[in-house]
Image (cartoon, rainbow, N blue to C red):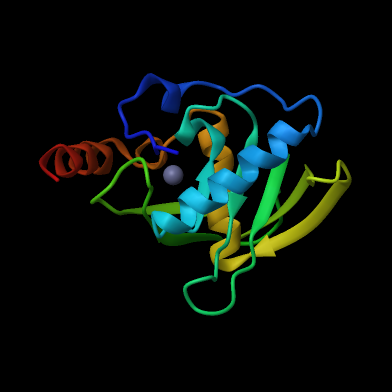
Length: 162
Ligand code: ZN
């Protein structure tokens, strides 16, 4: 499974809702987790592998401890009250460059799991940033879209040079 690099058009498009949890959806999630671990990433969204559906996989802490793969289908993120935080983010579709991105520090997320159950949970810290990063992918938004113009220009220049 190949991971697309920007400026592939599919990375800038809005993805469609997953209408049903089929064996194909479960297989896609399993393949995406395999690709994410192989690429040494902590999150991977379906459009990054050319599948234009609202699904992403995440394992925020696997490099520090035991793997905890998570799959989010049709995720919806709501910011919780509290301060915004800045995290340094990388992206498997923007190799070689990092960006300091400001986002809400804690979020409430609703999603569907691979058994078709409706789920809800709250996340903070690195997981909150990772989830917001991956949901951005489902809306065709990349980390440089979250930067001020001067930072965005510098990020894209560094990416071109990388
Ligand atoms: Zn990304």
